[in-house]
Length: 244
Image (cartoon, rainbow, N blue to C red; front, side, top):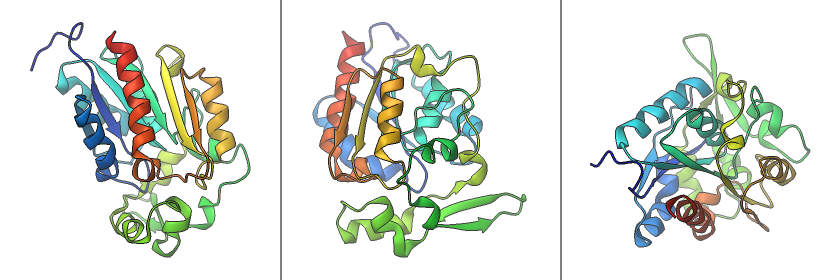
């Protein structure tokens, strides 16, 4: 693989968020491939913002070419941290995702505006290290996380969801400034998101001065599954902008 990050077209590195997993990007990956854009879905550990971001940085470094980082939900925290002072990262795409300021946590941002019902849907699990991880109650998963996905697919998603630690949701990016202040960013989200209120997503997209800010009426939180065309189009816009 070439190491010339000046002339090589970027890879889309896709970072899932809490309660999802890498296969949630399948529809997007297939469409990116059809458009000639290589993509890699990272298995986000969902243990801590800094640790998860370091893993993504390691993946990016292994590719030895420029990257467009794409984050869903809590994955927005991870890509914001992973992109800081990282010359391989050329653009950021936030898909129903947090775009935090330094120190802002997922719990803080999701509660900034009314509308999230996630708190009533999660169930805790005690960990041997003294921490706690959270999953969405499988009986509530469809309505809470993927209301605009068919029931059979939502049931599979509920069974394969990846838990997130409470510590990961309680920490924010570090450094002097968030990466979206330095890098171009694109945003797409659902207007009926029950995890992160649409008003909060709109606020973060405007604050970051996103190149495009697309709200899909009626779409829920699992946008990568329910709206892969819109997500792909947003990623393609970012790839085109940094490839020219």
